[in-house]
Amino acid sequence: TPVYGIKIACGSSLNGFMIIANYIIKCADARSAMEVSEILTMVIRRVRYSPGCVRAELWKNKDRHRFMVSELWRTKPDFDRYVNSTWFKRLLAAMEIGAEKPEIQISECDNISGIELIEETMKPAGLSSE
Image (cartoon, rainbow, N blue to C red; front, side, top):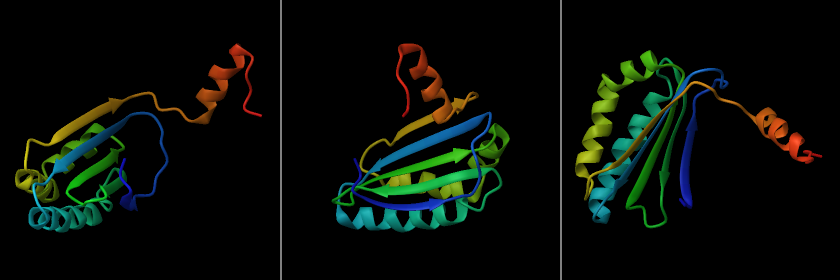
């Protein structure tokens, strides 16, 4: 679990279809970690203004040699546009600096719920949120 994080959020609410993208980059030493950190910080600061970006976050672990980028995109076309952008190419460049193959997880979600789903699920079991 990251203990040091930079959260940079894009404003929007969750509704309908979303793309969640997570990338984990591990660096071998402090020098490569500093280079990756600079690239990722710049990318996240720009991506938050991209059309369709709901959220973009950069997390660093305690020793700062491991990074996680987490993004939330409103639609598949928004994500596709980003993947073909200069900013995504810079993200890929940061991944290349990593000591090993990055972990990448991309989820396409078409049914996003909030607390109402938890409350609905708990009621049949005789539980309540109160």
